[in-house]
Amino acid sequence: MEAVFGIDLGTTNSCIATIGADGLPEVIKNLDDEYTTPSVVFYDEGDEYYVGKEAKSGMTVEVERIVAFIKREMSNTNYHREIDGKRITPVEVSALILKKVVDDANEQRSYEGLPPVKKAVITVPAYFGNMECELTKQAGKIAGLEVLDLLNEPTAAALSYGTKGLEGKTFMIYDLGGGTFDVSIMKMKNGILDTLATNGDHHLGGVDWDIALLDYVLMKNGFDVTYEDIKNERDAGKMLLAAESCKKNLSKSDKASFKLVYKRKQYVTEVSRAVFEELTADLLEKTIDIINHAIRLSREANPKIDEVILVGGSSYMPMVKERLQKEFSCPIRLDNLEPDRAVAKGAALHAASLVGEKRTKVQIGTDLASRSYGVKCFSRDGFYVANVIKRTDDLVYEGSHKFYTSNPDQKAATIAIYENISEQDTLDINKCTLIEEKDLRWGFPVPESTQVDVYVSRSSDSTVRIWGECQGKRVDFVIQYKGMYSDEEIEKLKTELESKRV
Ligand code: AMP
Image 1 (cartoon, protein in one colour):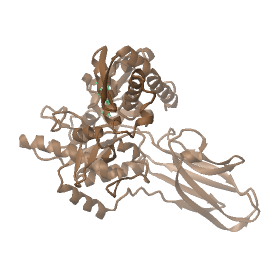
Image 2 (image 1 turned 120 degrees about the horizontal axis):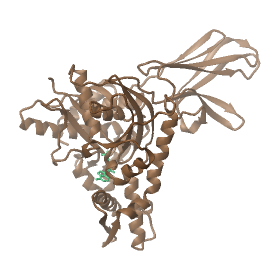
Image 3 (image 1 turned 135 degrees about the vertical axis):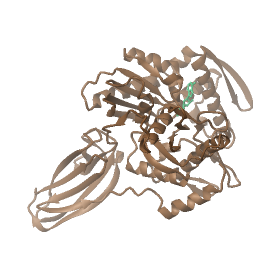
Image 4 (image 1 turned 90 degrees about the horizontal axis):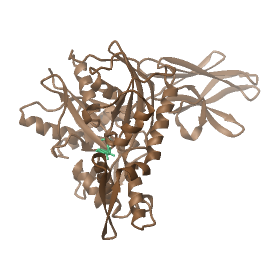
């Protein structure tokens, strides 16, 4: 079989997998002999980059030269960082992370005489819209990959479990990573995997547990500050790593020591798992609220969950499984204690099926849309957005919204279309992104209160079409997700990167 790969380009860690000689997905270790690589980039003064563990350890010294959690910014087209006067975009940072993961895998493979990594499936969060997906593809191309497909992370996780007894079941993928939380409710019937609901919080993850623990230790040692107050001080990065390390130890034992270094002095604090769990119980409760909301959003009303599958590094915390077991009486599964590798493995299985490998038994069925589309409206309180088609509506869907002209002899109206992730009928305009604003000119005067319709339709491949109509006159909106770079720019960035070892 042709060698193909699955890459989990994660918010905190990334991971690459392929299909082994036994036909099963296997993760390729990096050069630090670890299965996952921190998604952290360090830019040094000499125009060199360091990615992964080395970069993460740089967090203890030069915070201003570090870029972490970049995936959270993929949807923010205005985001950029400036280091040594150079503008750095989320796409470029993602390309560096991909290149590191691929270069390390190639090094390992070359020892075994295997060909280098070329064709890959990259995973993306379920909430990514077309724009973020296009940008992820561009990052893959800059890293020298042929991107076979993008795959939703929860779908990937389910695929990696696929042949292990999910048939006929409705299950929940609970994915608690380092910086994000996602939940999906899925169903597998006759080998076809359907998504019933997705929900999440993209600013909730392991790092919040680290901060809660750090704040406690600061307080215990008599400092009247929190991490938020001192996050730009030179000791802050090191403190956060110490918190993470203590947290991880608490997953294994009932007690762990926290070594806090602040203002040139070390303070050692013993923390028990019980105290840690108490400190962070509210964070865990937030995930439960998000789950319950996902159940309410489900395309099938009141789905009965037969299994919960834990994914993401933070699922190693015993409190996660214990709390979920209280909420659901069904089995709670942690993939052979490797929740941080399930997504990459599922992506490798999907890549294999795309090049014709028959061993994968699961087919991907109905997915959900990731975005809602609405129109700008006006009320006495000001502007708001009325959703015409919601992310929770069926994937194939057509919706419309009626307006009425407000002036006598009106010959035109301006229609503004907004994108958002809400499933509500109306919402605050500041929570939406403007897609396009256009004038619909019908060219002849109509009386006040004449109807103007706006239509939004979505097809099975997630293509969205939008148009407005008044008395037979129509104006079409063109939604283009071109990504950030032209083909020439991608080639240029790719060539620049090829010569570098990250
Ligand atoms: P991921 O993005 O899925 O790789 O998850 C990364 C997050 O998992 C980070 O916040 C880690 O601190 C956390 N994590 C990894 N291993 C453990 C562990 N053994 N116990 C608790 N948290 C962990």
